[in-house]
Length: 292
Image 1: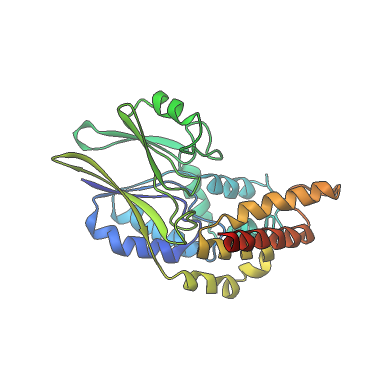
Image 2 (image 1 turned 90 degrees about the horizontal axis):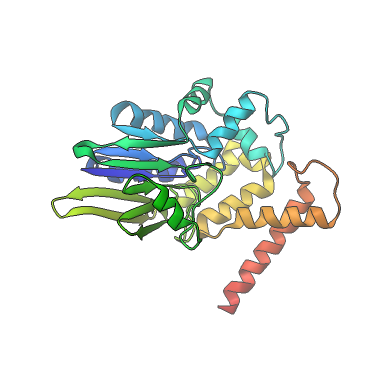
């Protein structure tokens, strides 16, 4: 029995399609770990592929925080989204999803216990068992507690975009990394294959190249560049390098806004702070490359 495990597609339908083409004939089941949409262009293309897998293959879907945001916006709870680098990407995604997509998100669980054949069980969640907005990292002190508290031998999570396998006692935690916005893999998409053979359980962590330039070209043709100017630049840089340009730029923009004692909405950071933050992060990254 082989299971394809994918997390954090983030609307990168090009990487998603490549993964499916390479692995679909080699696996028996599919687990998808949430954050199917946002950040990259044409989310409807990703959802078409999700629905195809759901219809024709034994597939489990878990809800990520990005799906929660789209659900909340559809209910009027995040009505501050607008055209800028803070929320423009989320608004663009919402505008390109259907009502049926939102209904599907609403049906998904934050976590599940998956029953497989021969009595095997897997616990899956997007972030942690308690929240799909918090990630589990291999170098943090609480990872052993999460594994110990899990009733299953195998726990699978995503959200951090960092691929790893962590074993503790007789249990294992798997993070397949990210299909759409992988970190630490020089832009190669990340996923995992979980297999049981006569010899026991085998975990394969995959890092594979795909046509990055194709998805980057879509930012302009889709209109996403205009909806979220600097944010889109950080995502495109991240796609190529695997360096966390977006979170670094966001944190720097927040810091700059605080330094300037800006009193506007914290959810929509002024574009000038995004622009300055992007320059700082880009300069720091280039300087670090020269030092190395």
